[in-house]
Image (cartoon, rainbow, N blue to C red; front, side, top):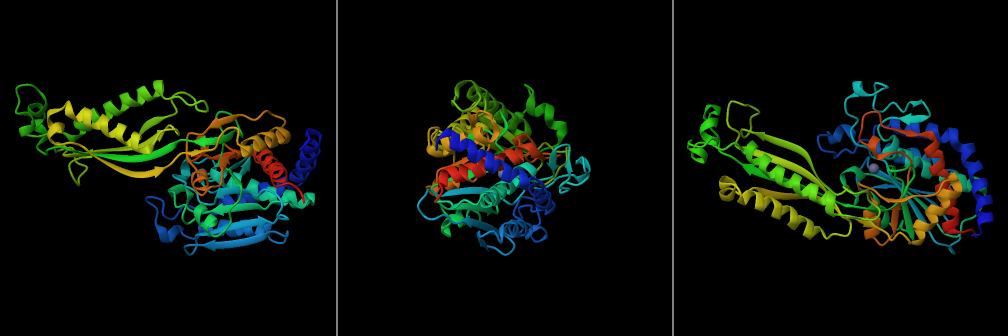
Length: 439
Ligand SMILES: [Zn+2]
């Protein structure tokens, strides 16, 4: 498209979005008020929470119904329905998916929130507040309104524009959400996931995410009376024969992993990531007498629960082998751990998501962003993961671009700036028309 044509289109679509802006903000506030916590989230009672996701999907369906948009609300489990909305093209252009998740993480302590409620949907200080504001009902609602803006413009697209509102993203249940949409035939030639793409700048274009692994190290000790501690740790005592504090041993493993993390900060480099973005993050540390939180024993068990954010060009087996070697080496330096080696248990894995920086969907999104916002697009790596991984695995090149800042995702007082919602909506709409073409 010639740049003057793009400017005219950006202007007309921008006006269409501006006319819809108040409705967009109200729709987001309404979506936030539905507490659609993933019912399978750890520590959450399924029966109390199932249904929220389906309500958000139906809210989106109602928003789009009656605008000559095909709606498919379907689920693999009752109350956990996805909504796919298709603005059908003439069939001669490229198709595009706009993807966002309807589920959110738990709200946490209500009193700590500025509005006394994680699900307030308050509109204040130029922002919309509440759990899911930026992660990622903001992006999802902006995507839905992009369909309405394209309709308002009155152009017929050449390729299909597909909105996927999906469940289960927060716990990687992509087989119920994003992958289920693909399996049902709602694919396309490329996809944009609306996750919040700041930092380092608002509305960055994100072609790459790292891999994420979770592992737990189990460490054994030997239980005895705490009065024996001196005998177990100082020279001249009977040492391991009496007791071994698993907490002390766990910190030796922790120290070795921390040192390796420092090394990663100095050695692992990727052109789209800031130095130090690849980490070995200790999330939960537990050490105690088995089955009791009682200090009147020497602790005989400890666990270290980690998240690894690894370089997207690395193979997961190599990362696992490196972590296990660090643990094994640290254990070899200790008489007790040599005889009682810590056990490394691997849990989740989100593979990296990667699209080349010169891929047409990256170029098109950058151009749409510049035309819609008047600001140069910045292409960066993101330090978390999203459903782009599973779209890429299904053969749909997927990037992310969306309103909000990840620092407010999963945080108290989560919010998203209204200016970013509107800007994102304009970019999505413009991208859709340019990518799909007009009939
Ligand atoms: Zn998210």
